Every structure is written in structure tokens, then in C-alpha cells.
Image 1: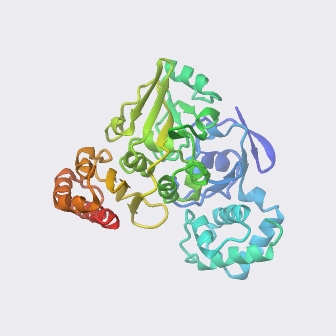
Image 2: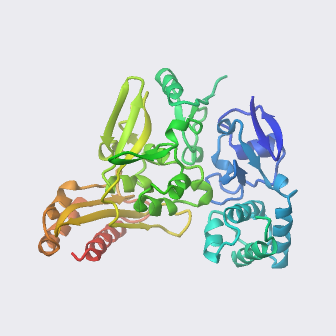
Image 3: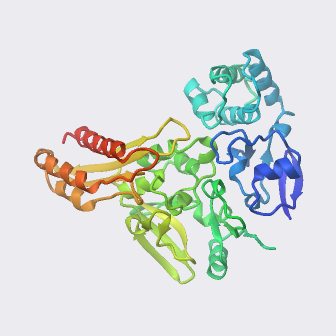
Length: 155
Length: 272
């Protein structure tokens, strides 16, 4: 039995300590916004925010997160910051198939949380672990800089 | 069934590893790629004593469970290690991957280990039986083989406080982010009162263990830059003999050529 905070709620997991957090989120908690792309930390589709930092949930054994705070897209979408990013992404058609987007949005949050006025280079660095095979990134980069302007004061 | 331990102090962790067969787990970014069927993990991410970066008179002491992000963000970290850490993987990996894991995983492609070779850093290994501080060059026996005893933990890396500013670092990978090194090279050269005080080079990702040839680098020590130029050909010939890359996903010939080019560039950037 292991307790952690999942999207603002204290939860208990019965999974074995060596299970991937990605699998536990999807199978035990039906949190399907985390996507499985590679299981080796290369694609970012399973990104979550763990204790305030962007992390690939496929790289985390559940036993290591006792007492930690996990935010997935399901929790994040309730925030004002999400609403700004959502609108910005839509405004430049930054979403096509959508598989990378939950991770991409959480990466965007971590970029802006650290630095509310990022340069283009800083944005590209911040999403460098999140692969997108549809848009070619330019629209996503644009969306994040629009969100930085539109969301002044939120970050 | 117990299949993990969550110690919160180093003593607790050492007591467990002294008695049980466990796999130390720091950040998990290497372990989780190819996990054992039924591992018993000793989670080290809540052992606060090994998560600090501090300095004493001689050394910057970096806790083994410091993440690459911790290293990059800390003002005590030498620039050479910051630069190499910034080029590892991507932010989400740097946020949990640790330098201790990078070293103990035993890969010659470990980008932080390369820096510790090129800076003659030391490792502090601790068990309930006592502790030992060894140069990192004595830690590796082969690919995935280290001298770490079953009841020991890597606790700290000790980097020299001085003399690391004039460095050279190049990581050659297939892409900018998330790249595994195909060849990596780090070096330091210091001139004191007109003479080369030290020259330290290290080559990563080309053989079972990172290559550090102190005997060859010693050719420059005590010489002026002009005198070093005089023995440059001999120095390069020695390295040409010493570097015998193994074939991996890319050819040994490519690796060798890149190594020699980087070595040339390092020397030229220092006027040699």
C-alpha cells in the first residue's frame, strides 16, 4: 500500500513497487491522458508533473513516489493556466493527432512556471524531450509564446 | 511480499544493503528501460544526505543522488559539468536522472562520468564496514562492471575546486536532444608560470570503459606551449595507438577519426 497525491486527491495504490507509474496511472487509476509511446524516456508522451517537475512516468517505479504529488493532464485541465494554453494551441492549430499533446501541455506549463517570458530557444529546449510527429513543432512553439503573452500574471 | 525499501537516511540504507540483496535505485532512468523481472529496489531518492552539493577547502562534493537538474542549477557546480549535464537527454530525464546512477550503471557512454574522468575526480564509497575514497579511474573493471561491493553505496563525487576553468567538451550524438553519445571528449589544460601544469583528457563511448591515458598526457607537463608543439606529433601518435574503438551501431573507423579530430581541435584551441 502506497499513498501519493494524484491531481489534488490523496490516493492509495496496491501495485507492486517496481511497476511503472505510467502503467499504474493507466491501469489502476484509469488516467489515460498519459500515453505510452516508447517506455524508455525518449518520447515524452507519458509526461507528468512530479513534485513540481516534468518527468516521464514510464521512467518512475511507483515505489519511489510515496508521499509525492503527481499532476496529469486530467488534473491540470481544471486550471486557468490550462485554459490559456488550450486557447493558444487551438489558435495556431498546434494540435493534429493529439497523442503528444497531454505531455506537450505539461511541458509547456513547466517552461512557463520556471520562466514566464521564455525566448524561442528556451521554449524549444523545454519541449526537447517531447516528440511530435505531426506538426513539426513550429506551431507548438508559437502556441507557447502566445500563451506567455495572453496569460500575463498567471505564471 | 516486500519488494522495495524506502530508507530516509544513509545509515538506514547501509543497514539494508548490508543484509539484503537489493538493487540501488536513485533516479530510475537507466533501470526502468530494461527492468529485472522481480527486482527488490532500494529507493535512494529520499536519502537526504546524498542529495547535497557542498564545498570544503579542496573539493566540490556532489551527492550521488543529485539529479542533473540539481547539478545544472547549483552555483557551486564547475562549468564543465554544467555544460555536459545540460546536454544529457531532455528536461524530464534531467529532472530525475542522477549522477550516481550515471556512474554506477557502468556505461562508457555516461556523459557525467566522462567529466569526472577528465577532472581526475574521486568517488566516496561507503558501507557499514567503513568508507573508501578512490579515483574514478579505479572504479571501472569493464562494461557494466565496477568495483562497487555488494554492501557499498556511492555517496559522493569529489571534484577539485580549482583548475577546471580552461576546459574543452564535445559530445557527438545523432541529434541535439535525447542523444546517446557516439563519441564524447572532455579535456582540461592549465598553464602556470608559462608551463603546462596539467593536461587531462578523456574519451567516452568508444570502448568498454572511458579512456584516460595519464601517461600520454604527462608528455606535456612542465613544458611551455612552444615545447609542447615540438612533441605534438609524438603525443598524437601515442593516442593513435592507444585509441582502439569497438564497433557499435557505428563503425570503429568513424569513432577513431572523430576522436583524433577532437584531440587535434583541443590542442589547437590551446595554441598547441
